[in-house]
Length: 209
Image (tube, rainbow, N blue to C red; front, side, top):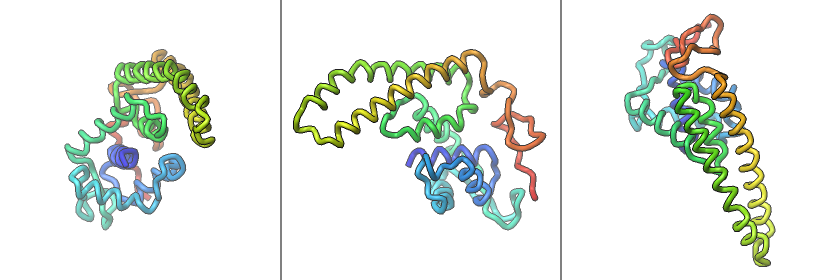
């Protein structure tokens, strides 16, 4: 799944070189098993698959900060795929896959502020266009006596999600436009480890035990 690939590539990119257990622990702290439908046991398989496809490089034992464990870092192809997936999920609304935008949110800091603002404006336009089409779709769904009850409620819950996400996107756009958070090319405003002051894109390996 594209969401899983982005999450794996993105978390490797943050901590590279990083070993599988560290990456699994990090992703589980994001509760990805709940909102991204990632089986914790599949994280190792996903890493090996990405390495097999050339998106990740497996480092020899002892080449990274934890000797004796397989570590990973992005290849050039992996870096390209990371940004392709991130931009695809950020710029395009998929009402049936809210996990895509949640995954994109995890890595927006790796894009420039102006691009994030432009993408949010594009999402707002897409939601507004969907709202314009809703009355016609609603008549088709609700006025047809042959429409199954579950389809009616699926339509209603999708409409409610669109309405809620449109409201959030407008508010988020305003916060970003007013200078909230840190993006590529700007001083970091948060770091996952005490004393870490470099920008996300240049985060060093976490301290060893």
